[in-house]
Image (cartoon, rainbow, N blue to C red):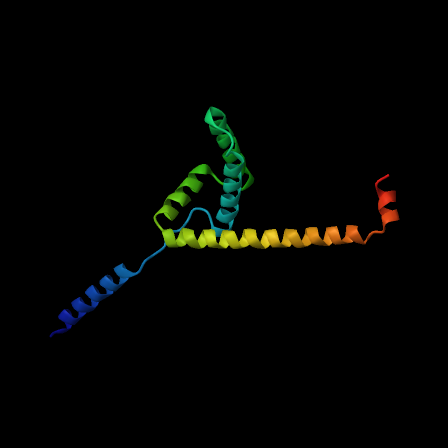
Length: 134
Protein backbone atom coordinates (compact mmCIF):
# COMPACT_ATOMS: atom_id res chain seq x y z
CA UNK A 1 0.00 0.00 0.00
CA UNK A 2 1.16 3.46 -0.65
CA UNK A 3 1.54 6.35 1.79
CA UNK A 4 -1.76 7.96 0.81
CA UNK A 5 -3.69 4.80 1.67
CA UNK A 6 -1.98 4.55 5.06
CA UNK A 7 -2.71 8.19 5.74
CA UNK A 8 -6.37 7.70 4.78
CA UNK A 9 -6.74 4.67 7.10
CA UNK A 10 -5.03 6.54 9.91
CA UNK A 11 -7.32 9.55 9.43
CA UNK A 12 -10.44 7.37 9.36
CA UNK A 13 -9.34 5.47 12.48
CA UNK A 14 -8.74 8.77 14.28
CA UNK A 15 -12.24 10.07 13.46
CA UNK A 16 -13.88 6.78 14.40
CA UNK A 17 -12.10 6.66 17.75
CA UNK A 18 -12.74 10.34 18.40
CA UNK A 19 -16.46 9.96 17.73
CA UNK A 20 -16.65 7.04 20.18
CA UNK A 21 -15.52 9.07 23.17
CA UNK A 22 -18.36 10.46 25.22
CA UNK A 23 -18.00 14.16 25.89
CA UNK A 24 -19.94 15.83 28.67
CA UNK A 25 -21.68 19.04 27.81
CA UNK A 26 -20.56 22.06 29.79
CA UNK A 27 -23.23 23.04 32.30
CA UNK A 28 -24.22 26.71 32.56
CA UNK A 29 -24.15 26.29 36.35
CA UNK A 30 -21.17 24.66 38.07
CA UNK A 31 -21.80 21.47 40.06
CA UNK A 32 -21.26 22.88 43.57
CA UNK A 33 -23.58 25.80 42.98
CA UNK A 34 -26.12 23.52 41.32
CA UNK A 35 -26.18 21.22 44.37
CA UNK A 36 -27.02 24.18 46.62
CA UNK A 37 -29.78 25.31 44.26
CA UNK A 38 -31.23 21.80 44.00
CA UNK A 39 -31.27 21.49 47.78
CA UNK A 40 -33.22 24.74 48.08
CA UNK A 41 -35.58 23.68 45.26
CA UNK A 42 -36.35 20.39 47.01
CA UNK A 43 -36.90 22.13 50.35
CA UNK A 44 -39.29 24.58 48.67
CA UNK A 45 -41.17 21.75 46.97
CA UNK A 46 -41.44 19.88 50.27
CA UNK A 47 -42.81 23.02 51.93
CA UNK A 48 -45.48 23.27 49.20
CA UNK A 49 -46.69 19.66 49.52
CA UNK A 50 -49.83 20.40 51.56
CA UNK A 51 -50.80 23.37 49.36
CA UNK A 52 -53.01 22.90 46.28
CA UNK A 53 -54.36 24.86 43.34
CA UNK A 54 -53.49 28.35 42.22
CA UNK A 55 -52.02 29.22 45.59
CA UNK A 56 -49.41 26.48 45.10
CA UNK A 57 -48.50 27.78 41.61
CA UNK A 58 -48.09 31.33 42.91
CA UNK A 59 -46.05 30.18 45.87
CA UNK A 60 -43.85 28.06 43.61
CA UNK A 61 -43.10 31.07 41.38
CA UNK A 62 -42.25 33.14 44.45
CA UNK A 63 -40.02 30.47 45.99
CA UNK A 64 -38.16 29.80 42.76
CA UNK A 65 -37.64 33.51 42.11
CA UNK A 66 -36.15 33.86 45.60
CA UNK A 67 -33.93 30.80 45.12
CA UNK A 68 -32.58 32.15 41.83
CA UNK A 69 -32.03 35.57 43.39
CA UNK A 70 -30.22 34.13 46.42
CA UNK A 71 -27.90 32.04 44.24
CA UNK A 72 -27.61 34.77 41.58
CA UNK A 73 -28.71 32.44 38.78
CA UNK A 74 -30.96 33.19 35.86
CA UNK A 75 -33.93 30.80 35.49
CA UNK A 76 -32.95 30.18 31.85
CA UNK A 77 -29.51 28.94 32.97
CA UNK A 78 -31.14 26.64 35.52
CA UNK A 79 -33.52 25.18 32.93
CA UNK A 80 -30.68 24.74 30.42
CA UNK A 81 -28.62 22.95 33.06
CA UNK A 82 -31.50 20.64 33.95
CA UNK A 83 -32.17 19.92 30.26
CA UNK A 84 -28.56 18.84 29.79
CA UNK A 85 -28.68 16.69 32.92
CA UNK A 86 -31.91 14.99 31.82
CA UNK A 87 -29.98 13.58 28.87
CA UNK A 88 -27.09 12.41 31.07
CA UNK A 89 -28.46 10.11 33.81
CA UNK A 90 -25.01 9.11 35.10
CA UNK A 91 -24.04 12.72 35.66
CA UNK A 92 -27.24 13.71 37.45
CA UNK A 93 -27.03 10.56 39.57
CA UNK A 94 -23.49 11.57 40.59
CA UNK A 95 -24.65 15.10 41.48
CA UNK A 96 -27.54 13.79 43.58
CA UNK A 97 -25.28 11.25 45.29
CA UNK A 98 -22.90 14.07 46.28
CA UNK A 99 -25.86 16.21 47.37
CA UNK A 100 -27.17 13.39 49.56
CA UNK A 101 -23.74 12.98 51.16
CA UNK A 102 -23.54 16.73 51.80
CA UNK A 103 -26.96 16.68 53.50
CA UNK A 104 -26.00 13.65 55.61
CA UNK A 105 -22.78 15.38 56.72
CA UNK A 106 -24.65 18.59 57.60
CA UNK A 107 -27.26 16.62 59.52
CA UNK A 108 -24.53 14.76 61.42
CA UNK A 109 -22.70 18.00 62.25
CA UNK A 110 -25.95 19.61 63.42
CA UNK A 111 -26.80 16.58 65.60
CA UNK A 112 -23.34 16.69 67.19
CA UNK A 113 -23.65 20.43 67.84
CA UNK A 114 -27.10 19.92 69.36
CA UNK A 115 -25.78 17.09 71.55
CA UNK A 116 -22.95 19.31 72.84
CA UNK A 117 -25.46 22.05 73.75
CA UNK A 118 -27.78 19.55 75.45
CA UNK A 119 -24.89 18.04 77.38
CA UNK A 120 -23.73 21.47 78.54
CA UNK A 121 -27.24 22.32 79.72
CA UNK A 122 -27.44 19.02 81.61
CA UNK A 123 -24.14 19.74 83.31
CA UNK A 124 -25.47 22.95 84.82
CA UNK A 125 -26.55 22.34 88.40
CA UNK A 126 -30.20 22.44 89.41
CA UNK A 127 -29.76 25.68 91.35
CA UNK A 128 -28.07 27.32 88.38
CA UNK A 129 -30.95 26.21 86.15
CA UNK A 130 -33.46 27.69 88.57
CA UNK A 131 -31.50 30.96 88.54
CA UNK A 132 -31.37 31.00 84.75
CA UNK A 133 -35.10 30.46 84.27
CA UNK A 134 -36.33 33.03 86.81
